[in-house]
Length: 380
Ligand code: ACO
Image 1 (cartoon, rainbow, N blue to C red):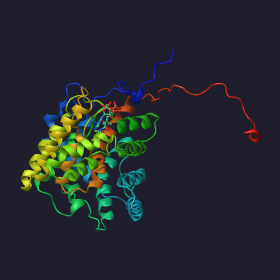
Image 2 (image 1 turned 90 degrees about the horizontal axis):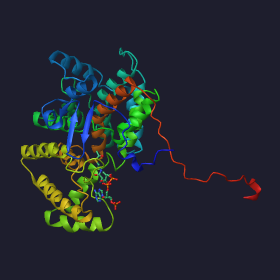
Image 3 (image 1 turned 90 degrees about the vertical axis):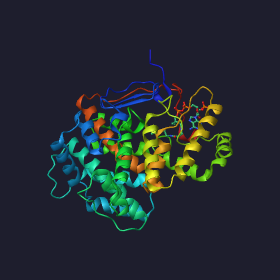
Image 4 (image 1 turned 120 degrees about the vertical axis):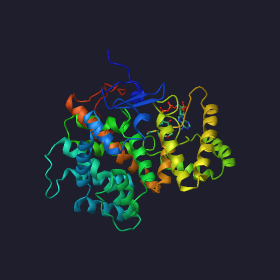
């Protein structure tokens, strides 16, 4: 007998991984053996990329080599720039521009000495995503492009390429914390898409392209922009309740709340709430942070009324919005910035899938008729 159809594949275990464990019942996230809280605020992003790809933290020399290798690959070649310029002329959404530009990463650049293969693709994708996203943000704003700064870490260099100024250590730390927090998260939709693609023994760049497409959707990576817009639209604390009540009454969802897996508070939300608090305090103006905390408090109460017993809680996107806003990243670059981190998770999953591969090929339940009769064209 055929297996039962499972809507949304909820509860279906489709991969084995050592990369991350999501315990939705207890609100725990483990990244390659480390509880998120243990590493998110301590590690640099490069250390976590190394951890995911090698299953251990690098020592000092290994980290220096790895950082130099990534930094040496940051520059985007002319063909990638051409694609971004064409996309900017047509004002393409940033995730579409990222997808198109990421496709060019299959092409080897002049003088490239990396051996061809899946690891080369993973390195190039992680190294160049920040350059692509920052370049596109500046092209859209009609600002001149800023070449990568090889002396800066991955997070600091991203902020530098976006703004043209060297970020403070506190700002670079906030972005490292954000990148570390969203680097990997079990078999989420984009990671699953990447694993499906690479399981056909396709290549990592193709898998990354599919994953970008999956991440673009508002039910996955597209939520922080709308979450922030909601906080801005609410404007002041007294408006939070009527605004969100009306939204729920119209059958709309409150962006930044609810999660497929977490039935308690998303542990990433706590890490990012702390990062946002520090960031806004360092800038000396906590108005937006305070308003967001009030919006969160009211939203949780209203969601409890709206779906009693469902325990809809704050997800990662709500505080992502605050951290990225605090860092001066434009709202339309929020989801691409998520991709700048998650591409490390996608590529790690691709390498893991390929190391013990079996093509991912589930089944469908046919719901149509089975004995239709052919009707000639002239009789239809
Ligand atoms: N606001 C209002 N109602 C909600 C919300 C919300 N944020 N989240 C869930 N619900 C409702 C659903 O409409 C559903 O109602 P129904 O039973 O009448 O159809 C009920 O609560 C149960 O929904 P779930 O089964 O928990 O939702 P599902 O697992 O299908 O979806 C999802 C999870 C997509 C994240 C959903 O909570 C949502 O749309 N949230 C808002 C968007 C968002 O913040 N997305 C980012 C997620 S984090 C990430 O992807 C990195």
